[in-house]
Image (cartoon, rainbow, N blue to C red):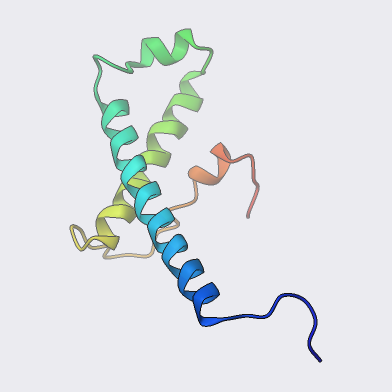
Length: 100
């Protein structure tokens, strides 16, 4: 049966390339944002509190981006992970998802 759009090599090449570039760009953006979070001249806890975040939320934000930066480091062979880790444990809270 032939329904829907046909799949071509060009379609797959474009999809694969788009997904890889999107992941690369998102991991780079995560690393950059993590650097801003770590810079107390840019985003100290007092600034985040002033924006309306609670202390617990600030902890979750910082833990989320620490985990995701580690995932990026591992992906780039800049770090290793000796034990299993759910890198999404904190980050999924930022996305409004409960993926337990």
